[in-house]
Image (tube, rainbow, N blue to C red; front, side):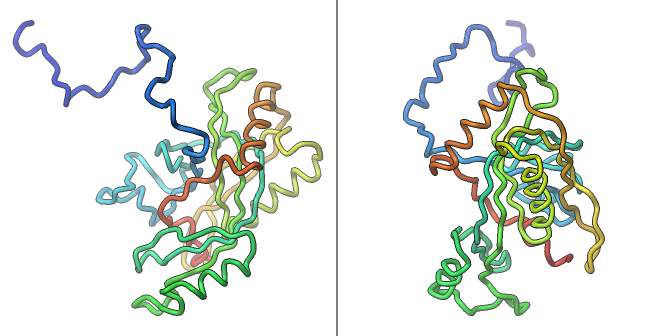
Length: 255
């Protein structure tokens, strides 16, 4: 090979398309079961989100306020997305304040269980340097569903499992979604919804919240895929990805 033509392994960024010589056997993942997988969250990028800070580990190139992003793949969506709701669950989530290290500490099915956990935690009753509680319970609506790829076929679209973790200000659009589904009747995943982020003015400035619009019915293939996700979440085999606390999850400071 002529000098200057070789490409080092370090410089190789990967092939854009799957080559024909690769098999579909999925070897090496034989022991990865359904309990070893989590469902990523679909979240909104806010003004102070770490996804916009170049020195943050969570930084995503091109991320702007009001965009949606996948918390596992870091894919960002600048336009509205198509969402099929599948399963709803209200949780009472305990977080540690970011100034005290941050992080998810537990999710409970009742406020009493969450309060008992906080009361018995070593940091119970402690505050940050700003006088804010280190531990906090957030009422969080978990909206499990499918995110459809707009570039795939309408009859058999590509779908990604996601969760909308809707706390505080986002509880309002969560209730709107639930109301739309109740009025439409039928299985939760019969219809398609358009999700986007809209600017809202709060006491501390502008922030972004969810906008939900009801569309038509889903195709048979999407319905069956949603039904499978419903069974997996209901049985406890699949759950939401529990990443670091984000700006969105403490955004009620702007309410």
